[in-house]
Amino acid sequence: QVQLQESGPGLVKPSQTLSLTCTVSGGSISSGSYYWNWIRQPAGKGLEWIGRIHTSGSTNYNPSLMSRVTISVDTSKNQFSLKLSSVTAADTAVYYCARSLAVAGTPIDYWGQGTLVSVSS
Amino acid sequence: QSVLTQPPSASGTPGQRVTISCSGSSSNIGTNTVNWYQQLPGTAPKLLIYINNQRPSGVPDRFSGSKSGTSASLAISGLQSEDEADYYCAAWGDTLVFGGGTKLTVL
Image (spheres, each protein chain N blue to C red):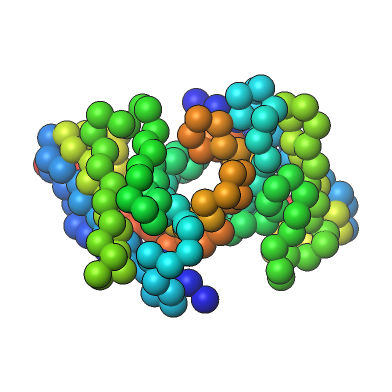
């Protein structure tokens, strides 16, 4: 059973870069054909897809965040990461990492528990 | 403002059948499959329905999904108190888009 766990600072100052890591256990991040996703959810609001990285390293980003987002993968550590630059209070949210199969239309099937990141001075 | 449109709330009494709608466009639901997630308070979303009407192992058959054109629906029959949660639809377009979520209250 695949498990995902987010980690990183819970507090980031405005204009700085938010950095999170997702550690995958129960399977190799580089085996099979999967996308590794980041999704966020502001308190009391809905879900927003941030972007994804394929096992091969190719990425796709939400156009609304593309200019500030970088997703990378470290297969040696079985981890993938999110960097979001120039953050503001609007980036305060619970951030989830998640997995989806690299087949058109297939869902996100495994989610991490989520980690709250607050942007405040 | 979410790309997919869901009613913000729904309610029903135990044993009832409730439906939650999800409206999109030709660029998302119209050309791609729909997935549904259940989110209990303080927890991560859980996959409830995938590829329009398929249930993952362990999801009761009380939950069913359908899709027609640019809209989709989630139906819950035999409503139970533990079904009280937020429900989200999702579909791939150019990106993954979600509905705004529907808060289901079991009266």
